Length: 338
Ligand code: NAP
Image 1 (cartoon, protein in one colour):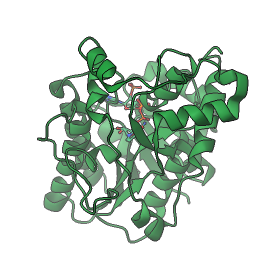
Image 2 (cartoon, rainbow, N blue to C red; image 1 turned 180 degrees about the horizontal axis):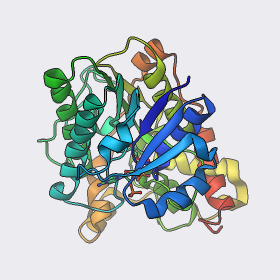
Image 3 (spheres, helix red, strand yellow; image 1 turned 180 degrees about the vertical axis):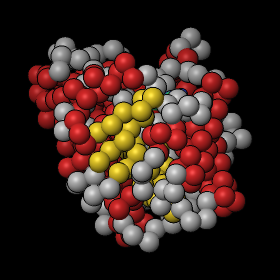
């Protein structure tokens, strides 16, 4: 397709793959980054034709730059949102996520954008309650942010998506909106600056975790997630939809088994035993990042992307291949020394 699309947060992991796919499909892409000093580095990483990609400085918490970034765009993929690795308080995370989404919507509407796609998360769907049908979460479910143990990142994604949908109901007439709600994103990395979601494969490979906690994630491949965003942007006649982007729920122990089976000696530092729950709970007392996940012990948060498959004809590739490709690229780039 031709035309101009804005992808926010061009320095991010998912945004990078999305920008590449959009350019391959004929789009011209505008992208925002916080500081234009990063432009050369992001361009070098993405390697797309220079005339097909334009950079604009814009921060989620400030108005400056957004009108310029949106000018001439018919479509917007709002991908940028803070995704920190460590423990962060609600006050730090929720305002940029929520206000950034609202700011992007407001400037998009003013610029005459026709379709706005918000990168939300399974975090906005599957936490604080069991699945309604007892088996898997669907696009009809919403996280309960008031339930105990729901962390700041999960709250930030839920609050931002709800605020965006409320804003659309009140002010959005004439602009189509949908959200993409990914699970844990894996796949090859484009540079040393990769997403928090890659870190659990990295830590298993480099031997920095002593064993497997009883924690798992539904996995989605970054290349397929970019393709899902493209479909959500390009498919005519969508409005208000929620598209889960995710595949099989896998325990960390299963991920470790895939690494050992497929990488042979390169996976020699991958642990072989489990970490008992009480040990993880003890570690959580001293380590904020462990505290963030300790509530997940023993939980299975399977998701059902059936609606996405039905409406957009989408599915993610074999999860084991994504795990192997993540590991291979971390090793090839020297990020993990095996
Ligand atoms: P990422 O690589 O950390 O990208 C996050 C992007 O947001 C970066 O470009 C970052 O810019 C930008 N950003 C953060 N705070 C900002 C601010 N105040 N102003 C402007 N830009 C800001 O993470 P990702 O995995 O690609 O995540 C992209 C989106 O997918 C996020 O909305 C995330 O919540 C969502 N998501 C990710 C996963 C996953 O497993 N990776 C799963 C579900 C949903 P800087 O480079 O300047 O920091």
